[in-house]
Image 1 (cartoon, rainbow, N blue to C red):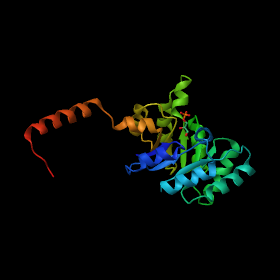
Image 2 (image 1 turned 90 degrees about the horizontal axis):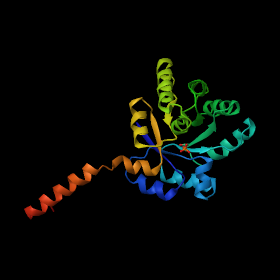
Image 3 (image 1 turned 45 degrees about the horizontal axis):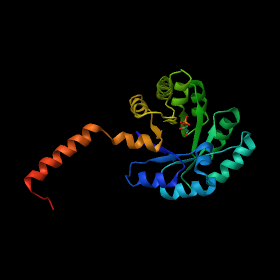
Image 4 (image 1 turned 120 degrees about the vertical axis):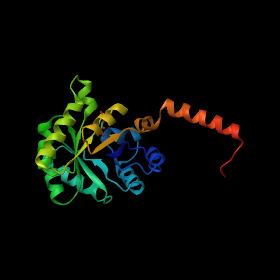
Length: 217
Ligand code: G3P
């Protein structure tokens, strides 16, 4: 399973990318707004840091302007994936970009029917928003399961990108259900490696080791 980082904060991206475990980055207009920086400069900086797909979202809602914005974002770097919303115009734009060989991430997916259309439009990634479904009392993980089942049965290449992650368990459950990617806010990525028993075990090992008076180097 691939792990993308869901942030537009370049310092956070750099600090996590040194692990070599980051396969890509997703941004959205809210994350760009939160960073307080210019979208073009931010996407350029991220693409210089990360070689995997970097999602940059159009803000136009009509087809013509989605195409113009998408082309501009795509010209920033080869690894930009144009993010379009799962609307009629967004699907149309997805088809045009994917026919042109440009990566497309179709975002704001909340149903299996929407995901089916995105796959037919040639999306590289479909982004089901798990957390936002859970927030309204629906079952986000069930959506992941429905989409992976449909894509497997019909052999669609579109990658299922679990988004709107709210816990480490969401990442684990998405992985178990066959999601290809999870896009993870930095704080959950850090929580993935932390475990109190790891800390305790290490502390015990080190205290026993000290008693030996040895040094490996
Ligand atoms: O990148 C989109 C997505 O992950 C949004 O998450 O937490 O705003 O629902 P959230």
